[in-house]
Image (cartoon, rainbow, N blue to C red; front, side):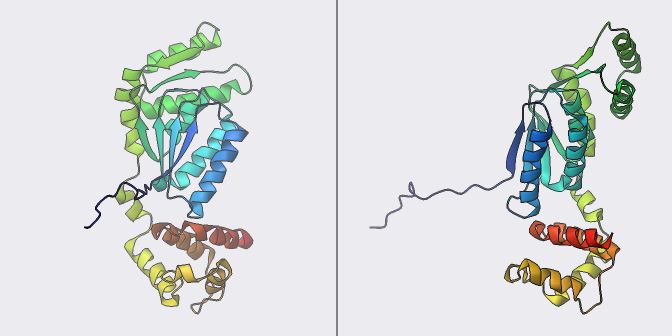
Length: 255
């Protein structure tokens, strides 16, 4: 009698790696994210889903993470999972990856009166302009902060969902964005150049050194810097993230 019992058959789930940020965004958080990010570029994970509920952090670390996320925005999603404050709000609002807000998501912003206060105001005004906050409310908040009357402004769950998240989603990447990263003609030319040599279709059979030799000793002649940058986009299109570090090294050597 045929045994149809499948209880012992393991079920394999695949999906993006999860990265949670519930503490201040500092060098430690940046180092952990960089490690996971590099694993994605090497093809060890297919993408990253960031859950964000942080009360701020180091703006320098936030700026670096923002740039990294925007470079690989098609493979990353950021989820507002609680209260996002100060520098963490910059991370959520200035990234161009897919943005999602859970029901409890809300935000607040505090103008810190230490360090470069004018820079903090400038960055906050940039967010105000992009997200079209009530100017009178915002300018009143800045004045109150300067006069030590009010240090924090709060965007509650309703405002976060209807105002902030609605506008933030306009920056989400689309399939059209992906297709427009390189024109069809550019992709065809680069694809033909690579596929004629066979080192993309037969990628799994090549070592990193062999892959690099195929590029540096191409029968079509050496790649220019522009061609290497475009070829990097081709690797992303084909999902060959583990080869990107080779192209980056070649680009660095050309500087």
